[in-house]
Length: 555
Image (tube, rainbow, N blue to C red; front, side, top):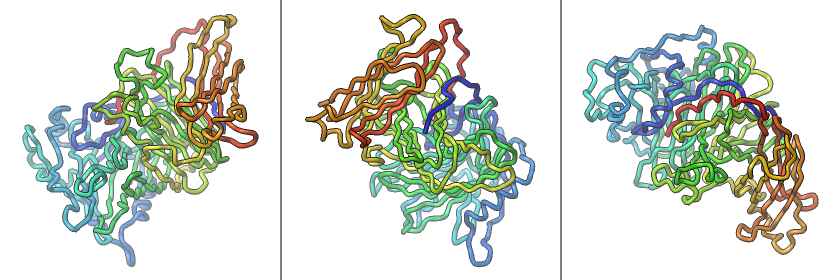
Protein backbone atom coordinates (compact mmCIF):
# COMPACT_ATOMS: atom_id res chain seq x y z
CA UNK A 1 0.00 0.00 0.00
CA UNK A 2 1.35 3.44 -0.88
CA UNK A 3 0.12 7.01 -0.95
CA UNK A 4 0.03 9.36 -3.91
CA UNK A 5 -1.57 12.57 -4.99
CA UNK A 6 -1.28 14.66 -1.83
CA UNK A 7 -2.03 18.20 -2.86
CA UNK A 8 -4.72 20.59 -3.96
CA UNK A 9 -7.59 20.06 -6.34
CA UNK A 10 -10.96 21.59 -6.96
CA UNK A 11 -14.07 19.99 -5.56
CA UNK A 12 -17.76 20.50 -5.16
CA UNK A 13 -19.67 21.00 -1.96
CA UNK A 14 -20.31 18.49 0.75
CA UNK A 15 -23.63 18.19 2.49
CA UNK A 16 -26.37 16.00 3.79
CA UNK A 17 -28.87 15.52 6.51
CA UNK A 18 -28.81 14.94 10.23
CA UNK A 19 -30.53 12.31 12.27
CA UNK A 20 -31.87 13.65 15.53
CA UNK A 21 -35.37 14.03 16.86
CA UNK A 22 -34.79 17.76 17.19
CA UNK A 23 -32.13 18.66 14.61
CA UNK A 24 -29.58 21.20 15.84
CA UNK A 25 -28.49 24.23 13.86
CA UNK A 26 -25.42 22.25 12.80
CA UNK A 27 -27.74 19.52 11.59
CA UNK A 28 -29.89 21.79 9.51
CA UNK A 29 -26.95 23.69 8.06
CA UNK A 30 -25.65 20.34 6.95
CA UNK A 31 -28.40 20.19 4.35
CA UNK A 32 -27.61 23.53 2.74
CA UNK A 33 -25.14 22.31 0.17
CA UNK A 34 -27.02 19.20 -0.86
CA UNK A 35 -30.43 20.86 -0.77
CA UNK A 36 -29.41 23.12 -3.62
CA UNK A 37 -28.37 20.31 -5.95
CA UNK A 38 -30.35 17.25 -4.97
CA UNK A 39 -32.74 16.30 -7.73
CA UNK A 40 -35.88 14.75 -6.50
CA UNK A 41 -39.51 14.05 -6.97
CA UNK A 42 -42.07 12.71 -4.59
CA UNK A 43 -42.90 9.17 -5.53
CA UNK A 44 -46.58 8.70 -6.10
CA UNK A 45 -48.51 6.73 -3.52
CA UNK A 46 -47.98 3.06 -4.16
CA UNK A 47 -50.32 0.20 -3.61
CA UNK A 48 -48.95 -2.46 -1.29
CA UNK A 49 -46.21 -4.47 -3.04
CA UNK A 50 -47.33 -8.05 -2.61
CA UNK A 51 -44.86 -10.92 -2.86
CA UNK A 52 -44.58 -13.20 -5.82
CA UNK A 53 -45.36 -16.88 -5.52
CA UNK A 54 -43.43 -18.51 -2.73
CA UNK A 55 -41.64 -15.45 -1.38
CA UNK A 56 -42.17 -12.06 0.20
CA UNK A 57 -40.97 -8.61 -0.76
CA UNK A 58 -37.21 -8.37 -0.36
CA UNK A 59 -33.91 -7.09 -1.67
CA UNK A 60 -34.37 -8.66 -5.11
CA UNK A 61 -37.44 -6.49 -5.64
CA UNK A 62 -35.51 -3.32 -4.84
CA UNK A 63 -32.72 -4.40 -7.20
CA UNK A 64 -35.25 -4.87 -10.01
CA UNK A 65 -36.62 -1.39 -9.36
CA UNK A 66 -33.11 0.06 -9.50
CA UNK A 67 -32.42 -1.72 -12.80
CA UNK A 68 -35.68 -0.44 -14.29
CA UNK A 69 -34.96 3.08 -13.07
CA UNK A 70 -31.48 3.01 -14.63
CA UNK A 71 -33.02 2.42 -18.06
CA UNK A 72 -35.03 5.62 -17.77
CA UNK A 73 -33.72 9.19 -18.06
CA UNK A 74 -33.10 10.76 -14.70
CA UNK A 75 -36.19 12.66 -13.54
CA UNK A 76 -34.89 16.03 -12.40
CA UNK A 77 -38.30 17.44 -11.62
CA UNK A 78 -38.22 19.13 -8.24
CA UNK A 79 -40.27 17.64 -5.47
CA UNK A 80 -43.09 19.89 -4.39
CA UNK A 81 -44.24 20.25 -0.84
CA UNK A 82 -46.88 22.59 0.52
CA UNK A 83 -45.73 26.17 0.90
CA UNK A 84 -46.44 26.21 4.63
CA UNK A 85 -43.80 23.48 5.01
CA UNK A 86 -41.17 24.95 2.69
CA UNK A 87 -41.52 28.29 4.49
CA UNK A 88 -40.70 26.83 7.88
CA UNK A 89 -37.67 28.50 9.46
CA UNK A 90 -34.91 26.76 11.34
CA UNK A 91 -36.56 27.50 14.69
CA UNK A 92 -40.09 26.64 13.58
CA UNK A 93 -38.96 23.36 12.04
CA UNK A 94 -37.46 22.37 15.39
CA UNK A 95 -40.93 22.69 16.89
CA UNK A 96 -42.16 19.78 14.75
CA UNK A 97 -41.43 16.45 16.40
CA UNK A 98 -42.66 12.91 15.97
CA UNK A 99 -44.92 11.77 18.78
CA UNK A 100 -43.13 8.96 20.53
CA UNK A 101 -46.46 7.51 21.67
CA UNK A 102 -47.20 6.99 17.95
CA UNK A 103 -43.94 5.17 17.23
CA UNK A 104 -44.33 2.20 14.92
CA UNK A 105 -43.88 -1.29 16.46
CA UNK A 106 -44.67 -0.09 19.98
CA UNK A 107 -47.18 -2.95 20.07
CA UNK A 108 -46.22 -6.56 19.53
CA UNK A 109 -43.28 -6.97 21.87
CA UNK A 110 -40.40 -5.82 19.66
CA UNK A 111 -37.55 -3.81 21.18
CA UNK A 112 -37.41 -1.58 18.07
CA UNK A 113 -39.37 1.62 17.37
CA UNK A 114 -39.52 3.55 14.08
CA UNK A 115 -40.05 7.33 14.09
CA UNK A 116 -40.28 9.19 10.75
CA UNK A 117 -38.98 12.73 10.21
CA UNK A 118 -41.35 15.46 9.00
CA UNK A 119 -40.81 17.25 5.70
CA UNK A 120 -40.17 20.99 5.80
CA UNK A 121 -37.61 23.80 5.78
CA UNK A 122 -34.60 22.34 3.91
CA UNK A 123 -35.98 18.80 4.13
CA UNK A 124 -38.01 19.09 0.94
CA UNK A 125 -37.25 15.80 -0.83
CA UNK A 126 -40.03 13.32 0.04
CA UNK A 127 -39.05 9.73 0.77
CA UNK A 128 -41.71 7.05 0.70
CA UNK A 129 -41.30 4.76 3.73
CA UNK A 130 -42.72 1.25 3.62
CA UNK A 131 -43.17 -1.40 6.31
CA UNK A 132 -42.82 -5.02 5.17
CA UNK A 133 -45.45 -7.01 7.03
CA UNK A 134 -45.65 -10.76 6.35
CA UNK A 135 -43.95 -10.32 3.00
CA UNK A 136 -46.08 -7.39 1.83
CA UNK A 137 -44.58 -3.88 1.58
CA UNK A 138 -47.12 -1.31 2.77
CA UNK A 139 -46.39 2.44 2.47
CA UNK A 140 -46.79 4.54 5.61
CA UNK A 141 -49.42 7.21 4.92
CA UNK A 142 -48.61 10.69 6.12
CA UNK A 143 -50.87 12.22 8.76
CA UNK A 144 -50.38 15.24 10.99
CA UNK A 145 -51.57 13.10 13.90
CA UNK A 146 -48.11 11.50 14.01
CA UNK A 147 -46.43 14.77 14.97
CA UNK A 148 -46.40 17.49 17.60
CA UNK A 149 -46.19 20.97 16.08
CA UNK A 150 -45.52 23.10 19.16
CA UNK A 151 -46.04 26.76 18.29
CA UNK A 152 -46.33 25.97 14.57
CA UNK A 153 -49.90 25.91 13.19
CA UNK A 154 -50.89 22.39 12.19
CA UNK A 155 -50.88 22.28 8.36
CA UNK A 156 -54.18 21.45 6.71
CA UNK A 157 -55.07 19.32 3.73
CA UNK A 158 -51.80 17.39 3.38
CA UNK A 159 -51.98 14.27 1.24
CA UNK A 160 -51.45 10.83 2.78
CA UNK A 161 -48.98 10.31 -0.10
CA UNK A 162 -46.84 13.28 0.98
CA UNK A 163 -44.02 11.11 2.29
CA UNK A 164 -41.41 11.86 4.93
CA UNK A 165 -37.87 13.24 5.16
CA UNK A 166 -36.42 10.02 6.57
CA UNK A 167 -36.60 8.15 9.85
CA UNK A 168 -34.78 7.14 12.99
CA UNK A 169 -34.94 3.82 14.84
CA UNK A 170 -34.72 3.47 18.61
CA UNK A 171 -34.16 0.43 20.78
CA UNK A 172 -33.01 -0.54 24.28
CA UNK A 173 -29.43 0.34 23.43
CA UNK A 174 -28.13 1.65 26.76
CA UNK A 175 -30.80 0.54 29.23
CA UNK A 176 -33.35 -2.31 29.03
CA UNK A 177 -36.09 0.15 30.02
CA UNK A 178 -35.09 3.13 27.87
CA UNK A 179 -35.47 3.69 24.12
CA UNK A 180 -32.41 5.36 22.52
CA UNK A 181 -31.59 6.08 18.89
CA UNK A 182 -29.42 3.49 17.19
CA UNK A 183 -29.65 4.27 13.45
CA UNK A 184 -31.06 7.07 11.31
CA UNK A 185 -31.52 7.93 7.63
CA UNK A 186 -31.91 11.61 6.72
CA UNK A 187 -30.60 13.70 3.82
CA UNK A 188 -29.22 12.54 0.45
CA UNK A 189 -27.93 8.98 1.06
CA UNK A 190 -26.59 9.70 4.55
CA UNK A 191 -27.10 7.39 7.50
CA UNK A 192 -25.62 7.02 10.96
CA UNK A 193 -25.36 4.30 13.56
CA UNK A 194 -24.15 4.33 17.15
CA UNK A 195 -23.24 1.75 19.76
CA UNK A 196 -23.72 1.71 23.50
CA UNK A 197 -22.65 4.93 25.19
CA UNK A 198 -22.04 6.76 21.91
CA UNK A 199 -23.09 10.24 20.81
CA UNK A 200 -23.78 10.93 17.14
CA UNK A 201 -20.66 12.17 15.38
CA UNK A 202 -19.45 11.20 11.92
CA UNK A 203 -21.76 10.01 9.13
CA UNK A 204 -21.76 7.31 6.48
CA UNK A 205 -23.14 7.57 2.98
CA UNK A 206 -24.45 4.98 0.57
CA UNK A 207 -22.48 6.43 -2.36
CA UNK A 208 -20.22 9.38 -3.14
CA UNK A 209 -19.65 10.67 -6.67
CA UNK A 210 -16.71 12.85 -7.77
CA UNK A 211 -15.43 13.57 -4.26
CA UNK A 212 -12.39 15.80 -4.61
CA UNK A 213 -12.74 15.89 -8.38
CA UNK A 214 -12.58 18.81 -10.77
CA UNK A 215 -16.37 18.96 -11.14
CA UNK A 216 -18.99 19.55 -8.45
CA UNK A 217 -19.73 16.57 -6.26
CA UNK A 218 -22.97 14.74 -7.07
CA UNK A 219 -25.15 13.56 -4.20
CA UNK A 220 -27.23 10.42 -4.80
CA UNK A 221 -30.38 10.40 -2.70
CA UNK A 222 -32.89 7.89 -1.39
CA UNK A 223 -36.19 7.82 -3.24
CA UNK A 224 -37.75 5.10 -1.09
CA UNK A 225 -37.04 3.07 2.04
CA UNK A 226 -38.45 -0.28 3.14
CA UNK A 227 -38.14 -1.75 6.64
CA UNK A 228 -38.88 -5.33 7.63
CA UNK A 229 -41.23 -5.28 10.59
CA UNK A 230 -39.46 -6.80 13.62
CA UNK A 231 -40.80 -9.52 15.90
CA UNK A 232 -40.14 -9.95 19.64
CA UNK A 233 -37.16 -12.16 18.72
CA UNK A 234 -35.64 -9.79 16.15
CA UNK A 235 -32.06 -8.74 16.94
CA UNK A 236 -31.17 -7.62 13.40
CA UNK A 237 -33.26 -4.92 11.73
CA UNK A 238 -33.30 -5.07 7.91
CA UNK A 239 -33.75 -1.92 5.79
CA UNK A 240 -33.78 -1.50 2.00
CA UNK A 241 -33.22 1.66 -0.02
CA UNK A 242 -33.69 2.74 -3.62
CA UNK A 243 -31.02 5.33 -4.46
CA UNK A 244 -31.00 7.60 -7.49
CA UNK A 245 -29.05 10.46 -9.07
CA UNK A 246 -28.31 11.75 -12.59
CA UNK A 247 -25.36 9.34 -12.91
CA UNK A 248 -26.36 6.22 -11.02
CA UNK A 249 -29.13 4.14 -9.51
CA UNK A 250 -28.62 1.61 -6.73
CA UNK A 251 -30.33 -0.78 -4.36
CA UNK A 252 -29.08 -1.18 -0.80
CA UNK A 253 -29.73 -3.65 1.98
CA UNK A 254 -28.75 -2.57 5.50
CA UNK A 255 -28.91 -5.16 8.30
CA UNK A 256 -28.47 -3.38 11.65
CA UNK A 257 -27.41 -5.28 14.79
CA UNK A 258 -27.43 -2.96 17.85
CA UNK A 259 -25.13 -3.55 20.78
CA UNK A 260 -21.97 -2.48 22.53
CA UNK A 261 -20.56 -2.20 19.02
CA UNK A 262 -23.43 -1.72 16.60
CA UNK A 263 -22.83 -3.40 13.24
CA UNK A 264 -24.45 -2.78 9.86
CA UNK A 265 -24.03 -5.39 7.12
CA UNK A 266 -24.52 -3.76 3.73
CA UNK A 267 -25.21 -5.17 0.29
CA UNK A 268 -25.09 -2.68 -2.58
CA UNK A 269 -26.13 -3.21 -6.19
CA UNK A 270 -24.92 -0.24 -8.24
CA UNK A 271 -25.97 0.54 -11.83
CA UNK A 272 -24.23 3.58 -13.41
CA UNK A 273 -26.18 5.51 -16.05
CA UNK A 274 -22.88 6.83 -17.43
CA UNK A 275 -19.17 6.26 -16.88
CA UNK A 276 -18.26 7.68 -13.47
CA UNK A 277 -14.62 8.65 -13.03
CA UNK A 278 -14.65 8.74 -9.23
CA UNK A 279 -17.27 6.64 -7.48
CA UNK A 280 -16.77 6.40 -3.73
CA UNK A 281 -17.71 3.09 -2.10
CA UNK A 282 -18.51 3.03 1.63
CA UNK A 283 -17.88 6.78 2.01
CA UNK A 284 -17.44 8.24 5.48
CA UNK A 285 -17.77 11.94 6.34
CA UNK A 286 -16.40 13.58 9.48
CA UNK A 287 -15.02 16.74 11.07
CA UNK A 288 -11.52 17.60 12.27
CA UNK A 289 -10.85 21.17 13.35
CA UNK A 290 -8.07 20.82 15.91
CA UNK A 291 -6.02 18.02 17.41
CA UNK A 292 -3.36 17.40 20.02
CA UNK A 293 -0.67 19.15 18.00
CA UNK A 294 -2.62 22.34 17.32
CA UNK A 295 -3.11 23.86 20.77
CA UNK A 296 -0.42 26.51 20.36
CA UNK A 297 -2.11 27.80 17.20
CA UNK A 298 -5.56 28.40 18.73
CA UNK A 299 -7.38 30.51 21.28
CA UNK A 300 -10.24 28.07 22.04
CA UNK A 301 -10.16 26.73 25.60
CA UNK A 302 -10.84 23.20 24.33
CA UNK A 303 -7.63 21.28 23.61
CA UNK A 304 -9.11 19.25 20.71
CA UNK A 305 -12.18 19.54 18.48
CA UNK A 306 -12.95 16.62 16.18
CA UNK A 307 -15.38 13.78 15.45
CA UNK A 308 -12.50 11.59 14.24
CA UNK A 309 -8.74 11.84 14.78
CA UNK A 310 -7.32 9.33 12.31
CA UNK A 311 -7.77 7.19 9.22
CA UNK A 312 -7.06 3.56 10.04
CA UNK A 313 -6.38 1.00 7.32
CA UNK A 314 -5.71 -2.71 7.02
CA UNK A 315 -4.18 -3.28 3.59
CA UNK A 316 -4.64 -6.30 1.38
CA UNK A 317 -1.14 -7.41 2.38
CA UNK A 318 -2.08 -7.31 6.07
CA UNK A 319 -0.28 -4.11 7.08
CA UNK A 320 -2.04 -1.96 9.70
CA UNK A 321 -1.70 1.77 9.10
CA UNK A 322 -2.64 4.85 11.13
CA UNK A 323 -2.78 8.25 9.47
CA UNK A 324 -3.59 11.17 11.81
CA UNK A 325 -6.11 13.63 10.42
CA UNK A 326 -5.25 17.27 9.85
CA UNK A 327 -6.99 20.57 9.36
CA UNK A 328 -4.73 21.64 6.48
CA UNK A 329 -3.91 25.12 5.28
CA UNK A 330 -4.95 24.09 1.77
CA UNK A 331 -7.16 21.35 0.41
CA UNK A 332 -5.33 18.03 0.62
CA UNK A 333 -6.30 14.89 -1.26
CA UNK A 334 -4.32 11.70 -0.68
CA UNK A 335 -4.77 8.22 -2.10
CA UNK A 336 -3.65 4.92 -0.60
CA UNK A 337 -3.35 2.43 -3.46
CA UNK A 338 -4.22 -1.15 -2.61
CA UNK A 339 -5.65 -4.44 -3.82
CA UNK A 340 -8.47 -6.17 -1.95
CA UNK A 341 -8.28 -4.02 1.20
CA UNK A 342 -9.22 -5.74 4.44
CA UNK A 343 -10.58 -2.65 6.17
CA UNK A 344 -10.51 1.10 6.65
CA UNK A 345 -12.27 3.66 8.79
CA UNK A 346 -12.36 7.09 10.35
CA UNK A 347 -11.74 6.50 14.04
CA UNK A 348 -11.96 8.50 17.26
CA UNK A 349 -9.04 6.93 19.13
CA UNK A 350 -8.71 9.54 21.89
CA UNK A 351 -11.50 8.73 24.39
CA UNK A 352 -10.38 10.97 27.28
CA UNK A 353 -12.80 13.77 28.22
CA UNK A 354 -9.85 15.92 29.26
CA UNK A 355 -8.64 15.97 25.67
CA UNK A 356 -11.78 17.89 24.65
CA UNK A 357 -13.28 19.56 27.76
CA UNK A 358 -16.62 19.88 25.98
CA UNK A 359 -19.61 19.05 28.17
CA UNK A 360 -22.12 19.59 25.37
CA UNK A 361 -20.52 18.08 22.26
CA UNK A 362 -18.88 15.18 24.16
CA UNK A 363 -16.39 14.44 21.41
CA UNK A 364 -14.92 11.77 23.69
CA UNK A 365 -18.11 9.71 23.23
CA UNK A 366 -18.31 9.85 19.45
CA UNK A 367 -17.80 6.55 17.61
CA UNK A 368 -15.42 5.54 14.91
CA UNK A 369 -16.70 3.70 11.81
CA UNK A 370 -14.74 0.65 10.66
CA UNK A 371 -15.48 -0.69 7.16
CA UNK A 372 -14.74 -4.36 6.42
CA UNK A 373 -15.11 -5.41 2.76
CA UNK A 374 -16.70 -8.80 2.23
CA UNK A 375 -15.05 -10.58 -0.69
CA UNK A 376 -12.48 -9.15 -3.09
CA UNK A 377 -12.83 -5.50 -4.11
CA UNK A 378 -9.98 -5.65 -6.62
CA UNK A 379 -7.53 -2.82 -7.26
CA UNK A 380 -8.23 0.73 -6.23
CA UNK A 381 -7.41 3.26 -3.58
CA UNK A 382 -8.59 4.65 -0.29
CA UNK A 383 -9.10 8.35 -0.91
CA UNK A 384 -8.76 10.82 1.95
CA UNK A 385 -9.99 14.38 1.47
CA UNK A 386 -9.02 16.99 4.08
CA UNK A 387 -10.50 20.50 3.71
CA UNK A 388 -9.48 23.60 5.69
CA UNK A 389 -12.05 24.75 8.24
CA UNK A 390 -12.17 27.20 11.12
CA UNK A 391 -15.55 26.04 12.41
CA UNK A 392 -16.57 22.76 14.03
CA UNK A 393 -20.02 23.11 12.41
CA UNK A 394 -18.52 22.07 9.08
CA UNK A 395 -17.64 18.61 7.84
CA UNK A 396 -14.18 18.70 6.27
CA UNK A 397 -13.08 15.04 6.10
CA UNK A 398 -14.08 12.34 3.61
CA UNK A 399 -12.71 8.80 3.26
CA UNK A 400 -13.89 6.19 0.75
CA UNK A 401 -12.79 3.33 -1.50
CA UNK A 402 -12.45 4.21 -5.20
CA UNK A 403 -12.05 1.36 -7.72
CA UNK A 404 -9.34 1.78 -10.37
CA UNK A 405 -11.65 0.53 -13.11
CA UNK A 406 -14.96 2.41 -13.44
CA UNK A 407 -18.06 0.34 -12.79
CA UNK A 408 -19.59 -0.79 -16.10
CA UNK A 409 -22.27 1.53 -17.42
CA UNK A 410 -25.74 0.00 -17.51
CA UNK A 411 -24.62 -3.13 -15.66
CA UNK A 412 -25.23 -4.10 -12.05
CA UNK A 413 -22.21 -4.44 -9.75
CA UNK A 414 -22.74 -5.97 -6.30
CA UNK A 415 -20.52 -5.16 -3.31
CA UNK A 416 -20.79 -6.24 0.31
CA UNK A 417 -19.25 -4.79 3.44
CA UNK A 418 -19.79 -4.24 7.16
CA UNK A 419 -19.67 -0.94 9.04
CA UNK A 420 -19.10 -1.13 12.80
CA UNK A 421 -19.52 1.72 15.28
CA UNK A 422 -16.54 1.31 17.62
CA UNK A 423 -15.29 2.92 20.82
CA UNK A 424 -11.78 1.52 20.53
CA UNK A 425 -9.38 0.28 17.88
CA UNK A 426 -7.32 -1.81 20.33
CA UNK A 427 -9.26 -5.01 19.54
CA UNK A 428 -8.76 -4.80 15.77
CA UNK A 429 -5.13 -5.99 15.81
CA UNK A 430 -2.49 -7.18 18.33
CA UNK A 431 0.20 -4.61 17.50
CA UNK A 432 1.25 -1.50 19.38
CA UNK A 433 -0.80 1.51 18.32
CA UNK A 434 -0.05 5.18 17.85
CA UNK A 435 -0.96 6.91 21.10
CA UNK A 436 -0.28 10.46 19.91
CA UNK A 437 1.88 12.33 17.44
CA UNK A 438 3.26 15.84 17.07
CA UNK A 439 5.23 17.84 14.53
CA UNK A 440 7.67 20.70 15.13
CA UNK A 441 8.11 23.91 13.17
CA UNK A 442 8.72 23.78 9.42
CA UNK A 443 11.87 25.90 9.48
CA UNK A 444 14.59 25.66 12.12
CA UNK A 445 17.94 27.36 12.67
CA UNK A 446 20.96 25.75 11.03
CA UNK A 447 19.11 24.54 7.94
CA UNK A 448 20.36 25.68 4.56
CA UNK A 449 18.26 28.26 2.71
CA UNK A 450 15.69 26.65 0.45
CA UNK A 451 15.21 23.67 2.76
CA UNK A 452 12.33 22.91 5.10
CA UNK A 453 12.90 20.87 8.21
CA UNK A 454 10.39 19.30 10.55
CA UNK A 455 10.63 17.14 13.65
CA UNK A 456 8.03 14.38 14.01
CA UNK A 457 7.34 12.81 17.41
CA UNK A 458 5.22 9.66 17.60
CA UNK A 459 4.37 7.72 20.76
CA UNK A 460 3.57 4.01 20.40
CA UNK A 461 1.93 1.99 23.19
CA UNK A 462 0.33 -1.41 23.73
CA UNK A 463 0.97 -4.64 21.95
CA UNK A 464 4.17 -6.32 23.15
CA UNK A 465 6.18 -3.14 23.80
CA UNK A 466 6.01 -3.45 27.61
CA UNK A 467 7.96 -6.71 27.32
CA UNK A 468 10.99 -4.73 26.10
CA UNK A 469 11.03 -2.25 28.99
CA UNK A 470 14.26 -3.78 30.28
CA UNK A 471 15.86 -4.16 26.85
CA UNK A 472 14.85 -1.19 24.65
CA UNK A 473 18.03 -1.65 22.62
CA UNK A 474 16.38 -4.65 20.98
CA UNK A 475 13.80 -2.36 19.38
CA UNK A 476 14.36 -0.75 15.99
CA UNK A 477 12.68 2.32 14.53
CA UNK A 478 12.05 1.93 10.80
CA UNK A 479 11.48 5.31 9.12
CA UNK A 480 11.22 6.06 5.41
CA UNK A 481 10.30 9.05 3.25
CA UNK A 482 9.27 9.43 -0.38
CA UNK A 483 11.15 12.72 -0.75
CA UNK A 484 13.87 14.77 0.89
CA UNK A 485 15.91 13.05 3.58
CA UNK A 486 15.70 11.73 7.12
CA UNK A 487 18.51 13.29 9.16
CA UNK A 488 17.76 12.00 12.66
CA UNK A 489 16.16 8.87 14.13
CA UNK A 490 15.76 8.47 17.89
CA UNK A 491 13.87 5.75 19.77
CA UNK A 492 13.35 6.14 23.53
CA UNK A 493 11.45 3.96 25.98
CA UNK A 494 8.34 5.77 27.25
CA UNK A 495 7.85 4.51 30.81
CA UNK A 496 4.50 6.26 31.56
CA UNK A 497 2.97 4.60 28.49
CA UNK A 498 4.95 1.37 28.77
CA UNK A 499 5.72 2.09 25.17
CA UNK A 500 8.23 4.04 23.10
CA UNK A 501 8.70 7.54 21.69
CA UNK A 502 10.00 7.81 18.13
CA UNK A 503 11.63 11.06 16.98
CA UNK A 504 12.41 11.71 13.33
CA UNK A 505 13.89 14.84 11.74
CA UNK A 506 13.24 15.22 8.01
CA UNK A 507 14.25 17.80 5.43
CA UNK A 508 12.53 18.68 2.18
CA UNK A 509 13.26 21.22 -0.59
CA UNK A 510 10.89 24.13 -1.18
CA UNK A 511 7.79 23.34 -3.19
CA UNK A 512 7.84 19.60 -2.55
CA UNK A 513 5.68 17.13 -0.63
CA UNK A 514 6.69 13.81 0.89
CA UNK A 515 5.13 10.86 2.64
CA UNK A 516 6.78 9.86 5.92
CA UNK A 517 6.29 6.41 7.46
CA UNK A 518 7.54 4.81 10.65
CA UNK A 519 6.96 1.66 12.67
CA UNK A 520 8.67 -0.40 15.38
CA UNK A 521 10.15 -3.86 14.94
CA UNK A 522 12.54 -6.29 16.59
CA UNK A 523 14.68 -8.34 14.24
CA UNK A 524 12.20 -9.58 11.60
CA UNK A 525 9.10 -9.16 13.76
CA UNK A 526 6.81 -6.14 13.37
CA UNK A 527 5.67 -4.79 16.75
CA UNK A 528 3.53 -1.79 15.81
CA UNK A 529 1.14 -0.43 13.26
CA UNK A 530 2.63 1.97 10.70
CA UNK A 531 2.27 5.69 11.32
CA UNK A 532 2.18 7.77 8.15
CA UNK A 533 1.73 11.43 7.31
CA UNK A 534 2.21 13.83 4.42
CA UNK A 535 4.15 17.05 4.86
CA UNK A 536 5.14 19.74 2.41
CA UNK A 537 7.21 22.89 2.07
CA UNK A 538 5.50 25.64 0.06
CA UNK A 539 7.33 27.36 -2.78
CA UNK A 540 9.01 30.49 -1.55
CA UNK A 541 7.50 32.72 -4.23
CA UNK A 542 4.06 31.14 -4.57
CA UNK A 543 1.10 33.21 -3.49
CA UNK A 544 -1.46 31.59 -1.27
CA UNK A 545 -4.04 29.84 -3.42
CA UNK A 546 -7.73 30.27 -2.90
CA UNK A 547 -8.89 27.51 -0.58
CA UNK A 548 -12.18 25.61 -1.06
CA UNK A 549 -14.43 25.85 1.97
CA UNK A 550 -15.60 23.00 4.15
CA UNK A 551 -19.33 22.39 4.18
CA UNK A 552 -21.94 22.24 6.96
CA UNK A 553 -21.78 19.13 9.09
CA UNK A 554 -24.48 17.12 10.81
CA UNK A 555 -24.81 16.82 14.56
